[in-house]
Every structure is written in structure tokens, then in C-alpha cells.
Length: 408
Ligand SMILES: *Cc1c(COP(=O)(O)O)cnc(C)c1O
Image (cartoon, rainbow, N blue to C red; front, side, top):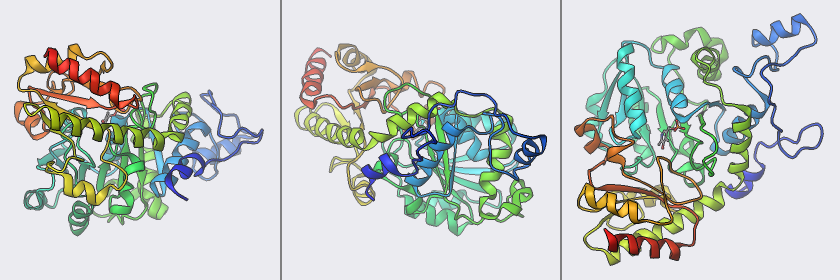
């Protein structure tokens, strides 16, 4: 099946009453017929539900749909994209061990990696696609490589196959945050990534109504249980060891579960992901090209533009479009603020992936806690404005951008 059909049908199970997808089980706990049965569920010896912090049918159906779409073995839905990243990391990296990460990350992830230092987990930030620097960052303590498919808001594009090849040569998994590309543009597991992160708060949900995240595991990376000591007690689960560890340790212990209502809303969103993403890619391409042609004093950054440093990699990896986000450099912070304030259609908001066009000045908001050096490595400058393009009529966006530029 092709992707738009899969978005509607893959992994969907009709419930006993004929509901065409799993209804909202707004329940905290699930009764069983006997003490023995509940014991079995607690011991992972029987399928079934006990408590929504551990699992819930509506959440399971969201997980199964994402697993099918990504082509993975299993997924764990979390309360946010950040919870997904934290759990994905804590499943394999222990105190005294290290991560190698692209420096051009979402600000919240940079903050998390810095906070993990308090617990003895060190992250080496390297320039994305700088293979020599990445090679040089490995040592015997390295346990994971981390990158974003399209950096937010840097908009650099990771050469995923190449990065996976290097990670695997060192027997370390690649964790790929695919939030900005989504499975519609790119199936990371098919290109060598081992663990996919989606902040489903963004494009998957599509309407900004549910903070949520999800981890998907390929089932293919062979963890060496001597090296990954934290996984050794899950050895009996074989290729499911990583997922078993995730579900039975920090995810459950920290209460990182997704609310059933949010799992339901994300499934509604998922069904139109392809329609929205295609339109957003087309609109972003049109807007970026038009801005580049008409406003030589503004630097337009979009992987779809032939002049982008990342255009060749983007073309190789994405066949349907180049994503829904572009950034503009307007020369100064003051002009960037005047431009943002003059726009009529977009919302000034710290989000991406909505049906509506959204704008933000990253330097004073999402990258606020980053140092100057971290900001520059993440492609954040004082004069930078990020635009998450929506599904509006692009002519209206052009008119609005034209009047706002004229006023700035
Ligand atoms: C938003 C975002 C996150 C964090 O997700 P939340 O759902 O806000 O916790 C992680 N990575 C990227 C690329 C994001 O855009």
C-alpha cells in the first residue's frame, strides 16, 4: 500500500461494536476476572491491561499504527516528545556513558542533554554530517548517536544512511528525531536508523491539541548485553529487549504515559497527515522561492531551494517535498520583531506543524537557554525568524508577507 492509504488503514482494528477505530478508553485501571489473571499481567505473562500508566487500549492502537507506518517492531507513546527522547536515551545510556549528537537540535533537546550531565551522561555535540568530527567523538563509553532528520530550526538535513553506517561500525544505535520530516516524507528505519522519535504534538496531531511523543524501535539493532548492561536483565526478550526495558523501567516509573484522549486525537490527525504535509511542503516551497526571488536583502533558508547547503542530501532522501518549515534572516533582531508583529495571518507561537502558519523568533524563545555557541551551532541567529507554513492559500500568505516586509 502507498502512504496515504496506510495512514488510513495500516494497523487499524475495528472494535467489538464496529467502531472504525479504537474509542477513547478514559479509564485509569482495568478489572480482571481473577487474582491469578492480574498477577499474570503484572508479570508480563499474559496480554491485557492493568493500569493506564503502563498501557491503555486507545494508546496501544496509536502505537500500533505508528509502528506499521514506520515499519518498526514496536512503539511506546509518551506524554510529550521530550519524554520520548528522555526514555529512548535512558533505556540504553547509563551514568558514565556518552552520546554523540548533532549540534543542530531542537532547543529543548539541547537542554535535556545538558541536564543529563548531572546524572553522569555526557553528550558530545558535533557538526551535523561532519564525518571526521563524528568519528573522532567515539570512544569506548559511546552508547548512542542522535540526530534530527531536518534540524529544527537549523533546517540542515542529516545524511541518515551515512550516519547510521558510522554508528553501526561502532556497534551503537542511531536515534533519529523525525518530527520535522515525519513518516510521510521519510521512513528513517528503512534508511538505517534504529530508533525513531516523533514529537506527535506537531505534524502528526496537526491541530495543536495534544502534547505527545512516540518512540519506535526497528527490532533489528543487536545490543551487546555486556556493553549495554542496563539491558542485560531483559535478555530473555531477545530482539524485544530494548522495548521490554523501556516499558518496564523509566517509562513506567516516571509516569511518562500518553493520555488516552490525546492518543485518540493523534489518530484523527494521523489520517490526514499526508494531505496536510504535502500541502505544507508545496506552500513552503512556493513561499521560499518567491521570497528568494523578490527580496534579495532577506536570506531565505529552505532545503528545497537549489542554493541550500542541504539541497543535495534533501533531494536524495525526500521524494515528495522538503518539509513545511523555512527560516528568514532579516538583518537585525529589531527588523525580525517588526516583521513578526506586522504579519496578519500567522500566529506568534512556539510550535510547528499546525494547519495554520506559525512564526517565532527562536533566539529569544526556544533557544533562550542555549549559550551563544550552542545557538550558532543550532543555526539560531539574532535576526532569524522561523516560519512553520500552514495549509492556507499560498497567495494570501504571499500578500501578507509582502505587506509585513514593507512595514519592517
Ligand atoms: C517539539 C519538538 C520536540 C519536543 O516535543 P514536545 O512534544 O514539545 O515535548 C522534540 N524534537 C523536535 C524536533 C521538536 O520540534
